[in-house]
Image (tube, rainbow, N blue to C red):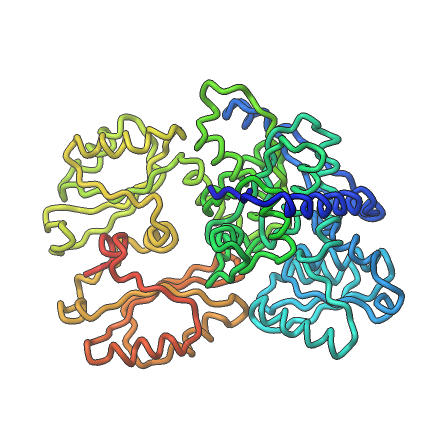
Length: 539
């Protein structure tokens, strides 16, 4: 957790007070309901009982574009002058800003152009066109699309509509807070998702003006935590890389205007991982039957983590807590990944590597040791006379998933139970390589290759933009300079493809090899010494 309220002088306090009042007026006068709707505040009774708090979900999935982005886009468009309306507007977006701007422009009779990367899922492209906007597909990333949009704006005299770092956009998003306090005036803590910061800035400045004692908490994906990075640096900074799962908040740099507001009016920021987001998506579905997108479920994941870290479910008076469901434009194919990971996020599954004797009855004995716990996954392949990684020819190594109740102490209790029964255990529950690749490749070890080749093997994970022919393009770029010893690719229907690959590289080739990797231009990371790879796939 990062706390956002810095020490400031009395002069700065007055300045922030004046800014706050200005935004308060903007939010109260924002005409967003010409196109947006007032969304429900839904009690989450099951989660409330589990965490011993009064938990509510602000349902921005109920907007005509299934996202809050419509509010800010419309509020910006109504502020344009006649000439700007005649020439039209343009934006770069692969998601909810595109759809919100398209519908808002359609409502006002303004021509809108949206520049989207060619990696954008077809459903999002079709939705933008359905709302009447022109779509131009340019580049393989948001940065490519943004650069193209800026060039089009200059050449065609179009007005760029920023997705978050604009006073009118921020004020439009702040209307979510206005509704929230009308629906639940006794709210104690509000959790808001953070990408570029427009929603958090708008909500925080409104909430703190009307109810200074309310706690406002921003929630970020830990692999896209541009606000936390800015708080640490004292100013907006660029992240080297952003995650691909919660694409709605995959922003490399927090907005300048949004950061100025957030650092004064927001209390703290929490980061959550992909598994915790998946668990929140499941919670929302079970309570509302709505499938939130990952960015949309971010704030509920932060609420859950906050309660656990504070121990609020034990002997504390119940507080009124609100999470903002910011959007529900889910890519359907991502559901497979979410269903696989949600129990890990709920701490209801442990992923383990366990060494058992290579003999009859060992699996049965192992199951008995678990004391009735359900096995969710069991991967094993006979390895012949392999000896290595601390495993002899008379031993077998299994990749096993075990269901837990969700109690924090049970995970460690399971490890201690197996250790007490003389099992050698490695915990891979938080090992991303194990969960993303290795679980599907157990048994593919290098025992059949010569020891010389095994010693020369280097393992890397890669990310590349996912589009028709992307894998073939990746392989073409990789070239045929080095022998590939391992290759695993699994399409999750996301904007980026992920590959695990092994290469045979001798000592003399290392310098040329790494130069080649750098020239490829792909995001990569060496995994040769990753313990999950060493346990199941190394020779």
